[in-house]
Image 1: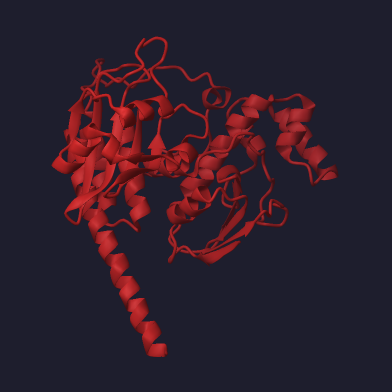
Image 2 (image 1 turned 90 degrees about the vertical axis):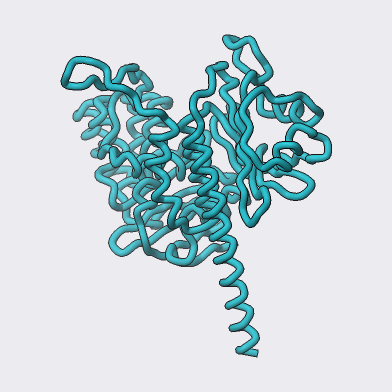
Length: 384
């Protein structure tokens, strides 16, 4: 399968969804006005990414993060002159200047930076070649970097990338603590010497994302915005697509299970076997409280995992479920809880408002898609 097109016609979020859901393996090359980028997928997960606009190599990232010394980087650069096909990361690893764990973290940070920059691109050509993992000559970059052993979920990269853009705080380089995994806890204090009053998470997220929801590029972008918002408030959540007889997994955040994205997309829950979920769908109102046990809810909690040993509870004491209404019916449903730690659920009014707006945006997106299909059919008939 070769996927070819322009970003103006198919957004990056849609491309990622196609490759992720299809569990595709291959290389995606995107060429913009002045720069080009390359993203390598394995079984639908991102394992490597480079952008010609990035400053330096992964070795420079490690240097600026104070993980390696200037002498080590210079030595690696000299070796690379003799072994041009070998990456700087591989050379540094063989020299013993850095261990595998640090390289994994550094590569993941670099992949995130590539995707963050791509989210800003408004136009460009893209091409995905199936099963083509040869990155040589794909784009003009100094170094191919390091391939992470466990791929990164494309949905996670899109959510985190959009979050960084909202906060406008992406650094050019990452810190030593981020690369070595030794970041310390702590927050900023005001100039008055005291702690500032924290704004409610749901209201803060509502302010940040409402503007984006006004002009979404596609229905998939709306679902990503919903998951991003909820991830600011809850420890984990699942977004389901709702039909008349069942709800089907669409996306997730925070699930600490193997192949989380894949398992959720394979999840189908028949409503007839769950009086609890059926009642929420029929009433079309958000629910917060203890989840009633039935055949389906017990199966769901078993599938996504119970609480931690510290919480001593395998059943959520408090859940929040938000039906998403489009065209007068429940089109999707968002499930959230804090079961991993048992932390109490805080205010959710902001998410309630956002979900309501998301339903209207989804309705608009569906209408636009139908109009485009109608126009395409008319054009095809005219040509005949």
